[in-house]
Image (tube, rainbow, N blue to C red):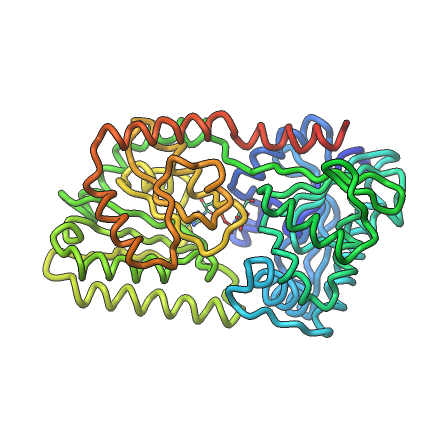
Length: 456
Ligand code: ADQ
């Protein structure tokens, strides 16, 4: 296999995971992977990333028509770089510090070291004048480090999570280094205009970058700032939705016969507002017992970062609330909250979207939130309601959702009541407009826009 490539994607995780029983690799699901696979195939590109297991980095291999190049992390780096700096420093800080970020030098140094390792590998694999597209908060130093190694490269960076307001970013003891890293890119893309503006403010204040039109000038180069909201493979959700009506009906019969289904689908992460959602459900039952008794909340939570203390605490909080609500408002034959702590297969997930009358997406802060777009794409009969937090990036586009502040539990409870009583015509008007938006701005359009910006 040819070692170099003129198109390299870099992310913390490779788009595959290991199935030990079958002794094989399984391609991860999700929009990013489905959008990038065709591009990688077309350009004979390489994806560089970590396998997800400590000290496990086989030589480059081909899978599903992609060339994959694993980078090794040892257990100590998993603890300090990944669980520490990425998930206990950057993740909470970039999500508006809704949990207190922790700042430790013993985490920063491994972050730098791992970023150098990634940059070394890209520098080795990227063909002369090739394009490297770096993803997300784990690898913010890579653009700058790569530019030192390979000034001929064209470098793009996409941040999947929000870039915080400058007043918060200012706390980061390594803010100048991170900015130097990011500003190594030719194009820096963010999910929302808000993040673009936040980044521009931070760069103007804490680096030598200067304003140049809509972008920046840094070290004698132009750095383009792009707003590129990520999306989903709308067609795939639509197609699958048309095939799972039977499964959706079974779900209804099993969990909510003759009741409305409210649905929540999230990684179990404290940014997703699952606990606030549950407290609003509690308020709904207190205030409007008759309306509430006509509903069942299905909450699906996918296990996430179980090694981080705050995630274990969040799980406990959520599970306590679920049992409190069920204890207080349930009875023989009625469970107000059906809770699942597991990953759903793609068809099961789409069947849940098809079964749900109301989708609750209530993060306290979220780069985009793909669940909101997946629900909309799956509503082939133009019905169903989306209740969406104004703090999700998706709220900038999905303006026909019922937009709420998830911290306002009273408002959220009243919105639930409104949602279950809404007229079919208002529901259809809203959903038609939402569907049009998601179909027009799907993940393929997103990847084209990002790559076009890099190649012009
Ligand atoms: P996430 O924080 O992971 O992504 P999100 O955009 O909602 O958040 O994506 C979650 C994905 O996981 C969705 O595709 C969803 O279908 C899937 N999922 C969730 N629960 C599941 C379950 N129980 N079973 C199966 N699948 C489940 C980060 C940022 C987001 C940004 C994305 C993409 O935090 O803001 O939208 O990257 O850029």
